[in-house]
Length: 57
Picture 1 (tube, rainbow, N blue to C red):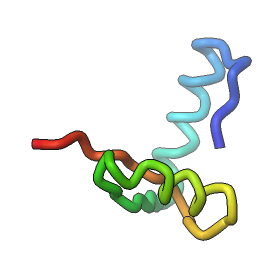
Picture 2: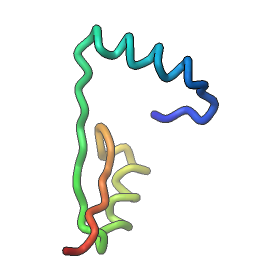
Picture 3: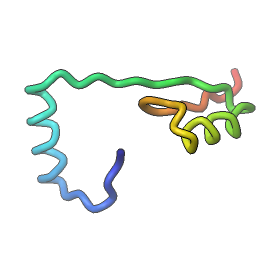
Picture 4: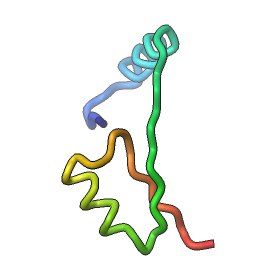
């Protein structure tokens, strides 16, 4: 989850704490042409983590 109202000090404190605990990231990649499917999955709670749109090669 992102938060818009963070200061630089808040970010540094977060990174200090994050370095002390195991942080696990999860992503699910979608080709750009499946952007609507990615949005639907995020809205329905079908994704744990973040959805990443991949540009065409």
